[in-house]
Length: 117
Image (spheres, rainbow, N blue to C red):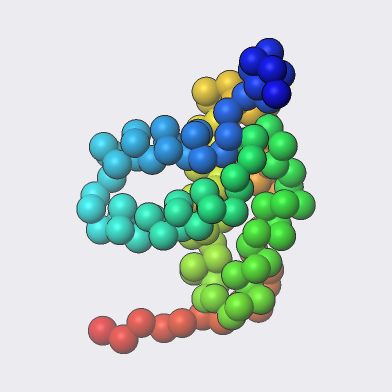
C-alpha cells in the first residue's frame, strides 16, 4: 500500500486505542483501570484494522460474541462502553467522522450476576 493510500485510510483501531488508553491512564483511579484493561485489550484484539472501516454491525457482532458466551449484562455493557469511548475519542481526533457505536445496545435478557458482600 502506498503512503497516500495509508494516509487516506488513517490509523488503525489499535493505534487510536493505545493513544486513548495513554490519556485514560492519567485521569482514572487504579481500580477503574484494572476493570477497564481486559475490555480494552479484547477490543484491540478484535478490531485490528483501520478504525474508519468499523461498521455498527461489526460492533454489534463483537458484543454478540460475549452475549453468546453467557457473560453478565454488566460485562457486556462495560465492553460496549470501552469501544464507545475509543470511538468517541477517534471522532474528536478526526480519525472518524462519526462513531459506529451510536445506535448499539446490548441485547435484553442477559444474565445479571449478583456480587456477594
